[in-house]
Amino acid sequence: MRQVGLEIESRPSDSPYIERVWRSSSSQVTRMMSIASAHWDLVFWRHHGRVRVAVQGPESKAGPARVPDDATFFGIVFALGTSLSHLPADRLVDRSAEISDATRRSFRLGGAAWDLPDYDNAEDFVRRMARGGVLVRDPVVTAALGGARADVSERTLQRRFVAATGLTCGAIRQISRARQAAVLLLEGLPAHEVVYRFGYFDQPHLARSLSRYIGRTATQLRDQGPAEPLSLLYKT
Image (cartoon, rainbow, N blue to C red; front, side, top):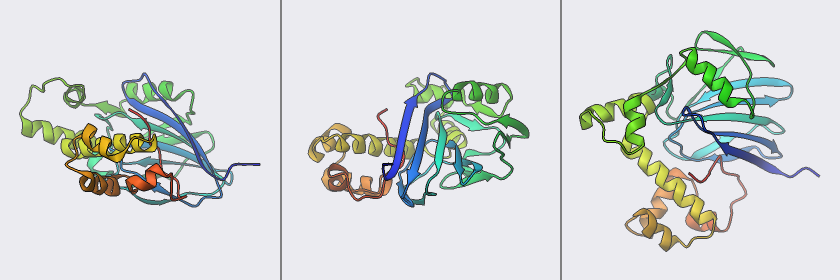
């Protein structure tokens, strides 16, 4: 008997352009809670024999999202600092851009045709995108995210963060903190310990952050409810 819900599998990647690769399938579920994410995805799905492709931008807050029933999905989550050369990151925040001419074998992006990738060859596909100039990385943003001191002014760094990610440094930190807190709450860590570990002022502060970025309270995460599934949430 097929399990009801949204089954998600994901893996890390050794590509400097990729944060994570995921795949999922849906059965008898029509909605999920799409949690905040500082990253953008390239998403492929098959539904009723049709292949569809979309660029899903960063999400600044949690919100409900429709899920087509009996569909299979595959996605590439791109590393912070990586962006599409022809589509500014700030135009993608809290929205998606569907690619209308996708077929069962290929799709067009950045003025070129690409074979459909899959879960196992995502790195090769992204490497070709980078060689073709469709993907670009900002070395200043990448270095700053790695902890290096930026050789630019704070104002310039903020401007480059927004250009490369669509979000400010502060927004990225808050989203990351809430996601990490949610993972530990799901694993059973008490809320007061999460507050201490991640530097929240108190439990109400944690609650506001979770509501905004995860769409769940600490109690709902601890008790694994309500039934509406969450989008991709993983340990960094």
